[in-house]
Length: 431
Image 1 (tube, rainbow, N blue to C red):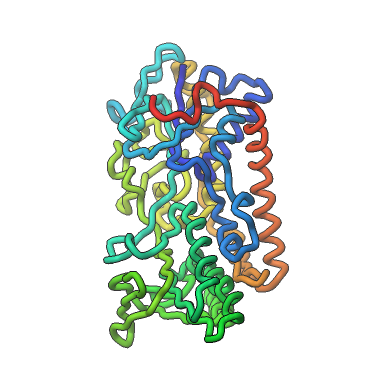
Image 2: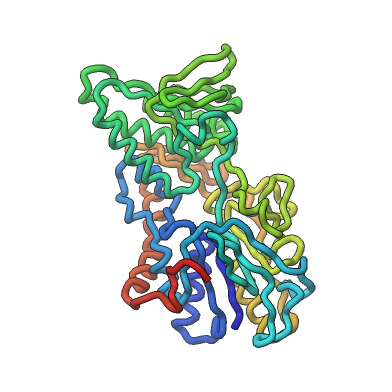
C-alpha cells in the first residue's frame, strides 16, 4: 500500500482532494492501492479571498469556510487533526524518477519518511506540504500578546468577534492595523467600515483607525496608479496613514512607533498585525531543502529541490529561480493542477518500480494577474495589466469569482457529509 500524506489544508491541497474524489468516482484506478491522509491543525479552512467581506459583515462564516473532514471523506481520504512539528526524510534525496531512492514496486516500496505530529508519526512514501506561512515580525515586543495576526486565516473569526464587541462599546474606538500590503489594505478598510456603522450612534466621535507601514508607501507590490486610488479610498473611510513608521512595541491599549517625526504612541483598543509572512517553524525542523528566506525550496515540478519525495505549494514554498514570486492565493490556485498531476505521476512510478515515460509537469509563475481589492461599501479596486478601475462593478466581479470558487468545493463537502463515517478512522488522532 502506497501512502501519500498531505500536510495542510490550503488551496492547492483542496484541488488535489477534488482530483482524487473525481478519479475514484470515475473508477479510473489512478488512486487504487493508495492511502491518502490529510493532516491539518484545524478541522476547517477559511478562504482568504472572502475574509475582508466577512469582516465587513457581508458574508457569513459558513460561506467562506471549508470543512476539511467532509472534503476528505468525499474523496475516501483519511483526515487527521493535529499539529505537525517535523517532516523526517529517510536517507536523503531522490533519483531520476523524482520519487526518492525507495521506488522498487507497489508492494515492496519502503517508506521514504514520516510526518511527526502531537508526539506520534505517520510514515509516508510521498508527501506534500501546503501549510501556508506565519505572521512576520512577531519578535517585536508585545505582538504575540496584544495583536490579532491573520495567519492562520481562521483567526479572522476572532477578529470579527472583537469588531462586533467594539461596535457596542460606548465612546470613541481606536484601532491600528500594521502592514500596508494588499492584505493590510483590505483589512484596515474592513475595520474602518465596520466601526463606522456604530460611530454614528455614539454621542462622541467614532474614534480613529490608523494604518502603519514600515516602508515608504502603501501597496508596494502595485503601481503608482493603484496606490493613488488606494490612498483615496483610505481617505474616504477616514483612515490615517503613517508610512516609513516602524512599530517598536505593542501594548495592551496602544502601539509605540518610530517615524519620520520621532517616537509616538497610538492608543488602540484593537491592533491587527498584517506585517508580512514568515516561514512556518515546521520547515526549519524538517529534513527539507530551504531557500535563504527559510521557505521550503522546490523545483519547477513543485518537488523538493533535492529530489526527496516531498512536494509543496502555496505560501510555504519558494520556487527555485523565482524568489520574487508573491505569496498570494492566485499563485497557489495556479500551482494546484501541476501539483495534482505530479503526485499522480509519482504514484505511477512507485507502482511500476521504474521511471515515467513522460516528464513531470512544470510550473512557471505568472508575472501578471487579475487583482481585486475589497475597498468596502460594496466597491473594489481592480488591476489587470494596464487597467485600473474602482467602483461597484469590480466588486460584483470579485464577489462572483469568490462565490464560484466556494461553490465548487462546497458541493464536494456536501457529498462528504452524506457518505457517512470517515474511511479507516479518518478524523482520529494518532497512528
